[in-house]
Image (cartoon, rainbow, N blue to C red):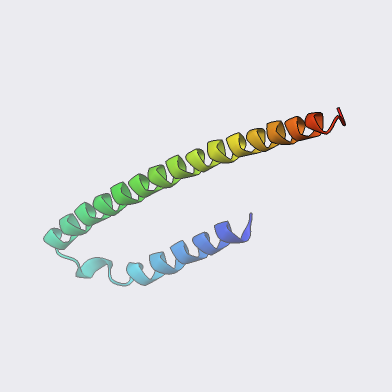
Length: 84
């Protein structure tokens, strides 16, 4: 288990412990509203992660193309200088 996973687990446990004491103090309306807000938050997080994934994919392809172009330019330069 890496440190990020351990920190996430510790945070989950602390939230669970703090909420256990308050479990009887919520009305049905508050529970419904919290459920809706949680679903909205999860949807937003998934959307943000998909966007970040798309951006990273575009960066990966751009860097790959840049490395390929640099390799071709270097090969052409060496060929022009008759090293190849």
